Amino acid sequence: MGNQELIDIAKRNFLANYRQAPIVLVEGEGCRVKDADGRQYLDMCGGIAVISVGHGHPKLVRAVAEQAARITHTSNLFFNQRAIELAAELAKRTPFSRFFFCNSGAEANESLFKLARRYHYERGDKQRIELVAANWSFHGRTMGALSLTGQPKYHQGMEPLVPGVRHVPFNDITALEAVIGPQTAGVLLEPIQGEGGVSVASDEYLRAARKLCDQRGALLLFDEVQTGFGRTGRFLGYEHSGVAADACALAKGIASGIPLGAMGVVEKLVDALPPGTHASTFGGNPVACAASLAVLQIFDDEKLIDNCERVGAYLGERLVELVAGAPALLEARGRGLLRGVRLAPGRDPQRALAAVREQGVLLSIAGADVLRFTPPLCVTRAEIDEGVAAVERVLAQGLV
Ligand code: PLP
Image (cartoon, protein in one colour):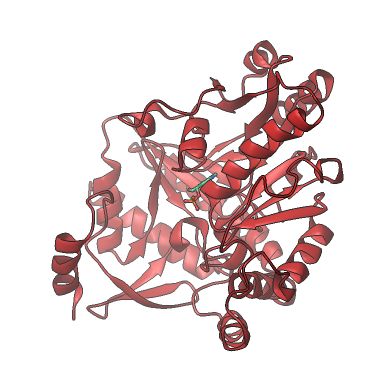
């Protein structure tokens, strides 16, 4: 079946919650994907920052197949070898010594929410129930993660939200200072707001957040779902600022397309969630953990985080040049291979996205008006040139 036939079925049988491009992706290799009509695209979207090692990486494919043949699920009534190995490996690469595995970014943030409240509860500080998060943040779609998300458009029609969340302007130290108090359990921030429009947290902001949390007894929590696993040119996005959190959420690139999420915490939080207080049936699934272990091995073998830093810097330069020559673009933003160009007021991002896709390049939209580039971390300079050239052509044709 081709694109249209499949989409006709989808229109009959899917809920209407997604705004999907009219193509059905059926296979991929490296930074290229193919649709059901056999057309190839350069994938500068990477499954929205998920495909960290490229499509169809043979080592990842082998790890998944071998693990699936061995054992696919154990439940958390028993230990499983791959989850143990993955936790140990993550502990070597991050400031976190303890991990809880789940299946998505939203679940990882739900876990942070519960961890923050329960940590203080266990210490007898029962008034610390509030979470502080930023305007324009995105933390996921489940009710806790949605309540943490600082974008009212996602809240519409979903209220009442989980109580006890306060939002403050992003990158505003004074606002943070005003809101953290004896009622604050934790402050949750993204080192780069990805869905919010690729806005980078300043180093001073993250440092101030750390200091205020320390002074006032709140936990500092980072949502590294989009920035983690090498995406910014460091293993975790916070590393650019030198400020570590007490706990963080991971997902997206963690297993390069196999569903997996994680919460990492520092040692002092080891008892924050006593037995029975939190769990996930599929969390730490051996196949997903085997995929994540393969991702880490591929990062090391192919120096993909270095590649991300180098090629990401090149993408940044190309986007700055692009903006300089195009009145339709306002600004280039981001770090590593999480970057975007902001469209000038009145430009239609959906139209721009479709026009670039017609040129054979896949991008995504972040925030209200940012064309986002999140290719696999194995992307080359030549592929970056190809992707940027497609945007250039579309600009020249007046389609942005
Ligand atoms: N947190 C951040 C920073 C994200 O970018 C996303 C997804 O875009 C999420 C959380 C939610 O992740 P998931 O869709 O896997 O639940």
